[in-house]
Image (tube, rainbow, N blue to C red):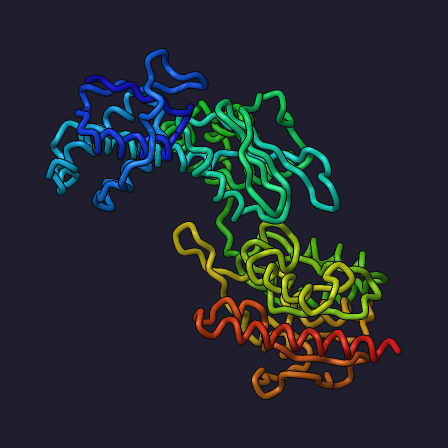
Length: 474
């Protein structure tokens, strides 16, 4: 008896699993099954082919392989996967260990192709500004043409990477939309529905050109890492031909120039130069910070304070993290999101507070593709105190909350154990009242068993901050 199974378009993993369970339960061999996909079922497709059946007890590697391969665009993928399931269910539990088996070999290559496509999407998708969304959040749109049905698997990566603005990813197969609260999927998009360019691209292209090393120009390697099919969606791709053509001349110029020792960074000298440009306003101070060289190694941009001048409460953290460095805004990463939640529970409006850091640049160490936070030294914190003092003078808060030991060091010049000093504090010589509590990143590092209690204590600290600020106002 033949069986026709109709699945939804794309990577219909749920439909395939249900159909496979039913087919195995009914004893239907692979050669007796016809697999079809589309919006309308095949003429002779059986309506009960995907009815509920008992789950299959498959080895974990087989289940993982199925999850990857259903995203492949090969129309034979479901037939091949069911052939694998049939053999495993019949007793070949260790089939995937036989790399020489033709079926295993082909499915493994298909899974690798899907994994490569995911990597390319993560690397080569480019968002462009598409105007303001509802409220203060910005909106961005990207167009991408994946080789396989990977959108649902790829989208959570961009939620984690860009949680603070609204975005949409358009593909010929479907679309993904993020509004800051939920990820949803929609119908296919069109290239013309995505912006052709935005104002940010000129700066990005200039940065890309400045990092291009002419002495290491290798067009074959570049095409291997960045296939030409993606070039039309990458703004920096337009600069590649001219950079390659001019590589030889730039190398010759580098050789002719006399070698010089690298310039040593002297923070004290840099700070003295800043002091000569005494800013007259917070805007002047921020402009000075933006064009100043980082006093810690690694950062890509200064992350300035955020909030209204004259805010009743100012929060001072340690330094920007990875997400803050990428977005140029304070407290937007995991610790910042936890802080926002705690502020709301304590009855404090984040938008009416001023948030900044003792150190204005992200100090990190690269480990592979990750940027690992490095704690600033006491000397580095001291170098940034010039900026923090003037920043708080311009904001003029009634109450300043030191989040963690580094903030306390920046505000007092002394190292103080947070557990002993937690609560209201006097910051010597400061025109505002102080309060000391933990940094929200501390809560993220705690074991799960201790997190709830520590978070409750943190929220209670913020409630005390609110009460102190209200008293100071009165």
